[in-house]
Length: 252
Length: 305
Image 1 (cartoon, rainbow over the protein chains, first blue to last red):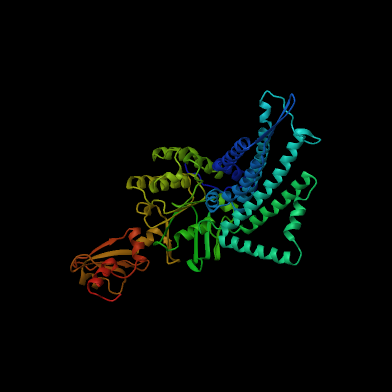
Image 2: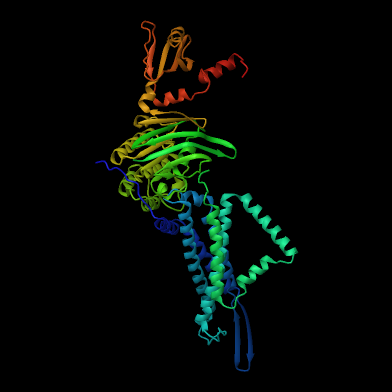
């Protein structure tokens, strides 16, 4: 029996949610690379800890310094690089095979990035804490460093907030650069050079734009304020990416 | 009723015009053949219809508005070609899952059964398939998505004869089961041409002809026989190609005015036959008179190019 096909309506929300689900299913490399980098960071942190011992009579103090900065650095590098892959021409063309327009694709991608950056920041903090707590596995008594008025959990929360802020900024920047690269590599190089000249001219006139912006963004006493400002700045970066590529062509 | 309209559509790529002033209206549930030589502008027209490309001039409309960047058009259109890139990490089964999520009318059961029939293992990756298998999968995906507007660009490339035959049956059965506007483009469409209700022929970026497939085919005749008899019979007619089949013998393809009939003089030993759709459009869009034989003959005679 024949069934005449009627045009289907699809809401932007549904299309964006499907894009998120598709990213989760079809781009396992993004999450996989995060886990691999954080594991590598943990191994590096553990293996590169430096020890020193002091003996005072019967008292023997063994100081072991773990530096988990490498986990943070690798997580931030990943937050910058993952959007470059997500916005590449191959990804764009394969996304357009499915029911999508440019806007819903961007919304889906940004939602997906927000999700994985959130999860990545959380796992990075957990990885840092794991490295820190490794000495506790031994039988000896351990004196942990001072973590501030809210203890270890407060320290972890602040660490998470700060890392999430920087990761959102890195993701926003990566997404914008990746999108512009998808449009034209010459455009990115041109904009970069123009930006350098513009900033140089401003610096010469005594108006240090980059410094002022960095001070506004990062010169905060409170982590929550940093998160709000970073989320706002990355939203602007995402918005520029969305607007600039709303006319991108597939298979041109 | 589905309607796809090109209104003076034009597409330029870095100063080179791929499609110019294309005005074409396709409407209703039917299978349309979009024919043309390599580089004629078929793929550009298909990508404009799919909303992948933005027209440089004019307009391409479907589902009540311009198709470029339209979610409604995208949700109801599927475009597949041999260059279609699916996410390379997905297996064929994974692609089917994603297509089922994306297109509400997608018939997953049928897609799976067709994949089994054509021995396309669901665990394989799209990029690892051969050209023929990739096109087979694309055609299955494109047809079982059951979009009101289905655009298939060179769907039979690289397939062996048996698969072509089977997939032609699939196309017909799918059209009967779920009528829609199916546009098939290409230049190797033997087997599919009987399914076309309409043909649109593009040549050098322009629309040459758009009419019913049968009426189009009927306009072209091949007359063969002794060269002088063929010459006499075709005098005053529009000759598209003329070639020497044997010494002293000639084969000529003519195009008749619509609604006219051809009467070959009896006793002249002439044979008049109809052309297949494929041969008709090749004759229509062919190069110089005499075809490739003329090139060799001119070379032998040392005629300056």
